Length: 129
Image 1 (tube, rainbow, N blue to C red):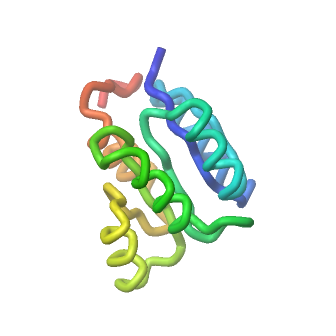
Image 2 (cartoon, rainbow, N blue to C red; image 1 turned 180 degrees about the horizontal axis):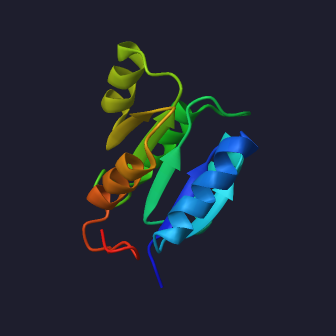
């Protein structure tokens, strides 16, 4: 069984292709569409990595990241921010809050997979990466 990734994304036109891409690369995907559901999912069954949008309903991604870092360090639960908010201030805030990486939308599928697997060094992509 592959590593588990919790994808937190509220836009179906982004979420559906992300799920397909990650599963195609041997990862098990759980998806939620808001911050409250993300916090609940992480508390109930911590994934191997969180792929987190910033602009999500109920609790924004930065607050979710704060909650994750209150419980897990960067090595225990990597968090990769995937956001359209790519300004330097957003990147700095994510870094200060403990994000492992920050990817700006739109993104390259190849780059996204490489950066996720960089955070999961003991995982091997199905397609040979």
